[in-house]
Structure formats: C-alpha cells, structure tokens
Length: 323
Image (cartoon, rainbow, N blue to C red):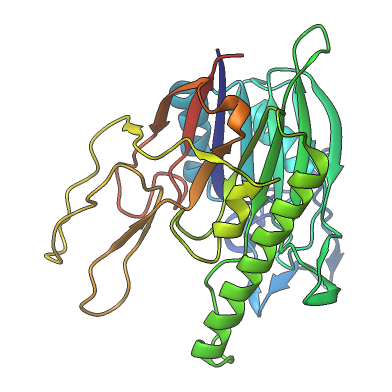
C-alpha cells in the first residue's frame, strides 16, 4: 500500500520575521534568504503593503508533527510553499528527512506561494503547466500557481502512477474591488482552471492510466465551477474523500452559532462575520482516475484540535493505494 496525501502548509515562508527575528542573523545557508543592510535597516519584501513574515515556529513544528506522526504519507502533495529551498529545509529540520525526493517549480502567484511534491519513492518526469492558458483569455496564464505533474516510481524506477497537484483561485476579493464583480471573476477563473485541468489530463493520460489529482481546490466537490475538472476523456474521476474517517472528533462549537459540521468530508472552516453559521468545506481533495477507483482504502482527515487550525487553516487528508 502506498499512502498519498495532501496538505496546505499555510504560508511556509522562509523570510525572517522583522520584529521577532531581526537579532537572529542567518548563517551561510539560510534556506534561500537574502538579507541586505542599509542604514541599519533590513530590506524585506511586502505584499499588498504588509510585511510578509516567516511562519511562526510553533506552527511549523505542529505541521511537521502532523506530517510525521499522524500522516506518514509515502507521497505528499503540499501547497503554499515559498520555494524548493524552504521545502528542503523544512524536510530536514522538522520531518527528520522523511522525504528524500522533492519537486517544486516556481509558479505564478504574486505572493510567491507554490505547490510541491515530497516523496519517499523516486520521482520520474516532472512537468509544470504554469504557462497554460484558456481560450477565453489566451494572453493570460490561467493558473494562479501551477498544475504540477509528477511521475511516482517504485524503487526499480518503474512508473506506479502520475500525481497532479494544484492550488486553485481563492474566493478572496481585495477591498478596493467591487465584491460582487470580484467574486464572479474569482469563480470564473476557478472554472477556467478546472476546464484547463481536464483538457491537460485528457491530453497527457490514456483512458486506462493510473493518476491522482489532488490539491487545494478552494471550493467544494459539488461546486459548479469545479465540475469540468472531474471529467477527463469523458471518464468521470472518483472522489476518494466522500466519506472519510477522522483522526479525532472535531472540536465542539463554542460560539453559540449552532451545530458543528454535518459530515466528515471537510478540511477548511470559515466563520463569516455576523449571524451566518460557520461553513465546513472540503477544499482539499483527492480525485482518482477510473483505473484506481477500486484500488484505494482508508480515506482519512487529520482533524484539528482548534477552530483556527493546528499549524494550518486546512486539515490534511490522505488515502492508501493498492498498487
């Protein structure tokens, strides 16, 4: 059995926190960090006027613990990682070098968050689809980050399956944009991304191919904007997380806003302001090709102990593949 999982690591940045870490000057190998001094000030990059900080130490330790002690996936798709150097550093310092094979290609995100693959098994061909476009907007890259395609091999270098990892457009609308028009454009971009994924997979995979599509889809499996993604070459992909087990029961609601989730199939919790109830959505998904439909078991989500999340605002999910 090969365990395949997905986990949004929630801003695994390498940049040092100006306020908390200004005195901690890195050595010769700071994980891709370049610090320059001018007039006793550190030059740091910002995003939308805000300082981009390194992930908090406690949160980094916690996501590392969940990966090593709870998930122990053989192949792990990750999202929201700044670059491959910080992913390698994270693997070395927090995962005890659990993953000897790591793949990441810089994508399109202005915040510099990428998708990557960490594997105990050898990695074969790596293909980035970051430059893909959609017919509706042929001059614009369709993916907010990337669709990363990676071959997973056995130790004899024989191909086992192909893994596609992505992170689709979020629902976030900047405050200076019209909220209704902004939400419409976000949904339409997610639809264009879903249609492009279906087109790419249909082109890259044969009808009997073994492949897994996973990542943070920023919408539920029942979303009309994602529905084109679940069909490749007129074959319906299989949702491996329809009825997952949980590592622990979810923390009970304490806000007086009603009951907790009505299903185990959720990885993201959103608590809107005002009277609406919290929303529990399966943003982090695992979809299987028809050839793998009857070859998976033990779909599981590691449930958070805090409403805000344990090191991440997404809960990790995984399945076991019998190959």
